[in-house]
Amino acid sequence: MTSTTTFPGAAAPAAQRTLGKRDYQTLGLSALGGTLEFYDFVVFVFFANVLGTLFFPADMPDWLRQLQTLGIFAAGYLARPLGGIVIAHFGDILGRKRMFTLSIFLMSLPTLVIGLLPTYTAIGIAAPLLLLAMRILQGAAIGGEMPGAWVFVAEHVPQRHYGMAVGTLTAGITGGILLGSLIAVALNSWYTPAEIHDWAWRIPFILGGVFGMVSVYLRRYLEETPVFQELAERKKVARELPLKTVLRDHRKAIVLVALMTWVLSTAIVVVILFTPAYLQKVFQIPAKLSLQANLAATFTLTIGCALVGWASDRIGTKAVMLIGWGGLFVTTYLFYLGLPGTAASLVWGYALIGLFVGSIALLPIVGVRAFPPAVRFSGLSFAYNMAYAVFGGLTPVLISVWQKYDQMAPAHYVAFVSVLGFLIGLWPFASRGWQPRG
Image (cartoon, rainbow, N blue to C red; front, side, top):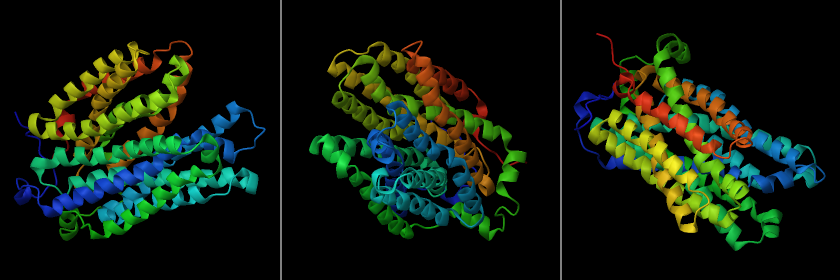
């Protein structure tokens, strides 16, 4: 059975064409940029402890230093809505390509600056303040990049390959986590803790900034999306504030995307970002082994995103949502109930749950087509970033508090949102998307 869902806004004559050279170039450059930009955003996590010791006073209590470091990390999430709304606003008015290029520049520059920042011992309180400012810029950039990338690719590719293209792009974006994990493992293997503390921590940030600038240059070869070009030619580009139209006419789509963002943010934050520290703290699993297992899960997550996109084109979005989120529910308890297990069971169990976390690719597949073309960028960006700021920011706090009373808290929370994702799959609008009236 194939999906019969249409992608509103796609040019009819091109709907059934196959992927061409230009499509592959668009997808490749978009995925590469997404990988580098998301790497720039998450690499902070892998070196948070080092940054905490370098950018805050040495006599500060460990718990307070950790709290303030996590606060700076969270600032990136809180800045996402503002950056996403502003970038999306101009993306719906001036074009997708311009904002798509701007977002990666706004991410690369502060990442490079972080790698060059003086520490607290050199400039005092200005060090954490500058770090906070750069993190806010990163958050604003990622808020525009991810929805922009999804819309840009979705409006370029033929309808029959819509799911595969969006899923592959999402795989590229999550590949940024994989890249960050690989570099963290490599640096901890090549350098001593003292060397990392003294200077080697700068390497991942400088590399991210430089490679990001290269991606900015490469994006000049991308073309504006056919959907936006058609809107401009027919003078149907949003004339009033796009967000105003979204809030007035597309509340159902906002709710859909917000709920799916809750599922996505929980899966990423808990399973991929939170669990390595959880394994070390609760089950005394060595840091090296927990990072290796996390690397396996991140790798299968990347594969899972591409598989979900491919499957949605073949058997339909509804079926993939039910299989994907149902599978995440089952593998969540298989993994967490089996801890600590053996080294082999840890890696394989983590890899299996990572594969089903790949169901997060369903968010852009569903979300892009939930809004009409004229306000698509603004609608997706607003709903996604507002929900991520809330759920992505609160999830670590919720899990940390809950875990004091039940060490299975991560499993229960991921299982809960898996059920939510399954139920969303039964909502016809999730599969159908926005349809023009009449």
